[in-house]
Length: 592
Image (tube, helix red, strand yellow):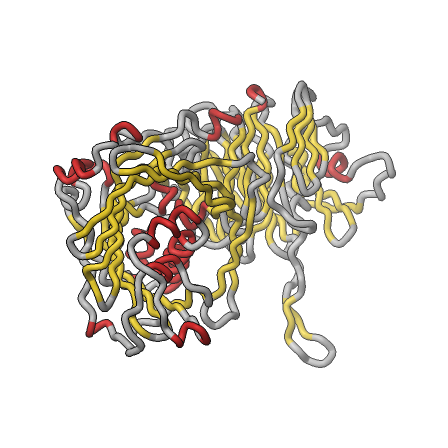
């Protein structure tokens, strides 16, 4: 038997509005199955006012939601042959980037594993119309997490069929969030209560326990012509996903949702384009929804605000790289590095697939070649011909003995690689091929035994940005409160010397970068204040990100005190980016 997911100790809307006929326990075998709500093309005539409210279907542009995205659903409330019809319009309202953040904590069933994800909140404006288009009522669902809406049920279905429990659990949590959304809105509550009365059941006075099961493995793929035939193939792959709600252990409501990839406006409803909910012991009592129209907001977030905020999982890694020509910006992403072209298509990143685990470092070897360090490997990607939205595999991968946590490219194909324990190697590339590896500093042990004989693993990972190379034959290392300079002699041997303490008026960043440090020389891991290469802009961090130049812009931020972060400007001083655990910002300074 499939495990049941507890939804909430409080009744949801679908429980409130569909009557409970008796006190006996009802099992799935005793109830009729719910069929997907497939409507004939001509049936849209039942909603004559639809075209005056929102006409046509539009998914043009990026996948994430825009401010002003709109959807229109036909709603049928059925009691046997008696059917009441309405129109429901959903409008998306985005908030300012950086001031709309929240955190999702995801626990496995054993409670020993947790992942955290940054999420952005949005508002959903709901407008109810009569079938002829006459407006009846308005309401707003505030502070709705976008992650549960924009992610795809299709991924959860595929994960369940592969036996991947994590993907199925996240899809279940997403389904619970969508159902819970109905309980928070007065308009939907009133609309659905017209179909049925609140049941009288003595057990509800003492215990109300709602659970849910979703049959992701049993989801059924349907042809493009079935369910919403008017849209044809515009919606892409669609699956019919059955799920059941139980009240106090008894089957209460049977549902089937027709789901597609939530592109554009469909992200407001998690890609649900049709839904049938029927009372388990009286299947003639139903609530049915069908997508009738979709329209994109006039401008995407980048066009509207010149700022792009990208949430993600907090364990994706903290790294940032601009290409030397300013064409690309690379940041960590979910199981991939995201490569964006700010001047062309920043809303459609190219995904660079890597071996998994947090990204430890990013660096461009040249304008067309990106190095990605994650775990104990370094991957090389040829990105010069990358098309926005494409997926690229590594051209070459190199293994390491330790976890990589720093990269410095110093020109002429020379790269310094920093690993856990402050191990440093100097790699030389030519024509995209690695030609030589030199050991500059052997990594310190990260494991040992205490006097008691207990085996322990020491904290051997240096701070992000602890290694900075000034030139091909010189590298500076900050390690355990001491700064050392390593230089390569004519014979190729490396020699170290301890650097004297810095004067109080000199920043540590300036010493590490080069003796005559100039402002805006490069990215700044962990540095609160940074100037652009042309000195026209400054960026301040400290729970919020503030960019100061011809205009002052407070962007907000999604990081906690003590978090690692990196921020910086590209070489042209056009683009600014900030990366912290699970959160990235990209800014077009020319349009602020």
